[in-house]
Length: 135
Image (tube, rainbow, N blue to C red; front, side, top):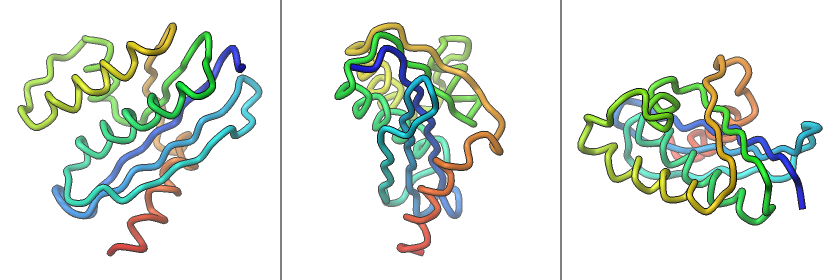
C-alpha cells in the first residue's frame, strides 16, 4: 500500500505514576494523516505510557503493509533503548520493551528518531484529549 509511513507516538501520565494515556498519528510520506488513535491506559508512568504508544503505533502500522516505517518519539530514553544504545534497566519497562521489539519484527525497515516535543503536537493532543476525559 504505502511505501513509507511515519508514526508519531506520545504517552503521558498525570502524576508519575498516575492516570495515563497514549496518542498515535500515522502519516504517509507526504504527511497525509492515515490514522489517528488515542486510548486511556490506566495507571502508568510516563515511560510506560510512551512504550504503550509505540507498541500501538507499530501494531497499527501493519495494516498499511509499508516497506519502511519511521517512528518519531519525543522520549529520548525510549528511542535510545529501541536503538539498543541504552540498556533497559527498569524492570517495569523490560516487558514493554520486549513487546515493542516484537511488534517491530513484523515490519520491514523500522527506524526510531527522537524529536522535539513541539514537533509531536498531534500525538500529544490526542493523549491529552483522553486524559481530560478521565482526570
